[in-house]
Image 1 (cartoon, rainbow, N blue to C red):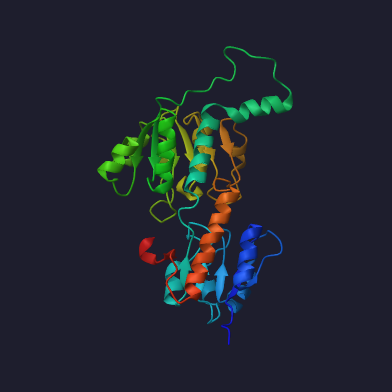
Image 2 (cartoon, rainbow, N blue to C red):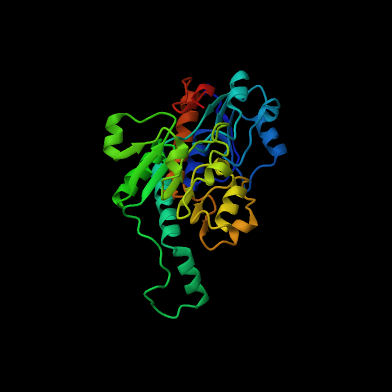
Length: 328
C-alpha cells in the first residue's frame, strides 16, 4: 500500500508555485488569507500536523510546544532566522527545526545599499518634493547629500550578508571595516579589503556609515545602546536590515532629533510594526516595511528549501537545514 502522506500546515500565504508543489507532495493545509495565525490557531495546527511551516510572524514558544500533538515532528521554518522558535524546547520534545539559510543574502545586501544611498543622497526627501509639486528648479546648493566614495563603512556582523554588503560597498569606493564575534580568515579579509576591529566602541566612533547584520541573540539585544550611539560622530549614518532589537530605538530617535546622528535607514524595528512616532517625523530617516528580502526569486527559493527539508525528513533523513541549539 502507498505510504500515507505527511500532514503539513502552512501558517501564511506563500508564492503560488510553492503552494502548488506543497499540495502535490503532501497533505497540506494552506492559509486562505495573508494574515498571521492567532495563538489559538497555531495551537490547533500543532495538534493536527506532522509538519508545521511557520514564518517570522509566528512565535513558537515553550508554552505552544507543550500543546503540540505527539505526531508533530518537524517545524520547517519559512525564513533564515529561527529566533521566533524555542529551538531548545522543540529538541527536548523530539521535534526537529529547519530553516532556509543563504537564499536571501544578495536581496538583503542590495536593500542595505539602497538604504545607505537613500539616506546619504536624501532620495526620499527629493521624492517628497516632487510628489508635492514643490520643485522650483535646479539650484547649486539644493538637496545636497554626500558622496559614498571614500566613506568608512563599519559592518556589525560579517556573515554572509555582511560580506555581500562589503563587496557592494567596495564597488562604490567605500572603505570596509567590521566587527564580528570571530575575525575572518586572512584570505577573506584580503579579498574584501576589510579591516577588523576587536573593539566595537572604537570602530563605531570612527565610521561614517554603520550597517548592522547581527542575528537576534541575548548578546546582541541593544548592542547599539544609548551609550554606544553617543560614540557616533554627528555626521554618521546608521542602517539596519537585520533585527530591530539590536538598536535601542528610543535612544536612536533621541540622537537623531538632537542632531547627534546624521540619519538612519531602517527595514526592521525593535517592537515589530509599532514604530516610535517621533522617528516617523524626521526627514533624515528612511523607513521601509521589512522588505529587505522581498523579491519573488528569494521567496520561491525559500519555499524550495522548505520543500527539500520536509521531503528529506519524510524520507527518513536529517533535513539539510536542520537547526540545533548549539548553532544559535
